[in-house]
Image (cartoon, rainbow, N blue to C red):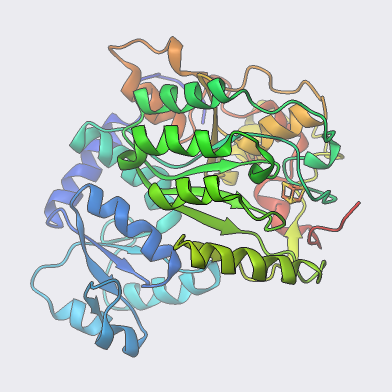
Length: 393
Ligand code: SF4
Ligand code: SF4
């Protein structure tokens, strides 16, 4: 979206959102007591608006989840006190749940929301206009672009990075976190990522600094790893102390030798009482096409590509907030020099009006309304171009 009235783009929408939320008792129920829902719970609890789960799985309604009540939809509908419902489910299950709700008379965007739209737009607006806070879903720091794997089609183009390339200076990792959290009040997932972040020699110091200063400003403090490297004891101790969560990608379908590495890593994490999530074995990747897409499109068409994409992963790099971590890293790692100015400099925001501008940027507004790298990206259509996972070069 292109800024037409910077700092005032969402005022009317915000009024309606806040009014609807008040009418719904300032409470949110999460429909789906699985992983997506459980990741949303700490965010809602932070704002004191979490009211419980709804789920179609009878077992969960009997046992509850995380010591929280899980309602069946029928039990929820019978309650006198209801709220907003957020559908937090895998994409393939969302249409069926939405139909269940529609059949019972609930209205989309009034009584219920899909979690991606809720986290990406509704909650950031609500957080600012009701709680005077800046909320973001996912912000990453790329501590290194080097990687222990060389995946063809890596979405950060890390295959093109030499093993001798310089990593981010530790002081710059500290500074990036300081800049972000000087302006942003709460992030659902704050992620140290790469390349492979376990190659970063100062990782333990980075975790300690960020954990000590900012742990209470994030729902999850995460490390995303390809699972090939076991962390040393210093890193493990820091992760345990600050509740760092390991997200382990699973490329074992294409590379069966990785299974053994995943076993070793998950055993080590379990021994050290560190939470982890080993992803499901990925069968296919989407091809963003950064190396070959070259759109000759109008401004309007590029804005449509950007608006449809809605990638949730932002990057903080020094004081620069990048809307799309892939766009920045691919451009740098392939030395394309595309989109050098496609960021918001947090240090350049005026004290008086920064919150509205930052909110708008975080939900997709900018001067151009798109990123230059969108000209070289399949965007949301990437799901039509499926390729093998993590083929090694
Ligand atoms: S996809 Fe992940 S594991 Fe593969 S090269 Fe890129 S950063 Fe490394
Ligand atoms: S369409 Fe643009 S914003 Fe979306 S992934 Fe591609 S480069 Fe990033």
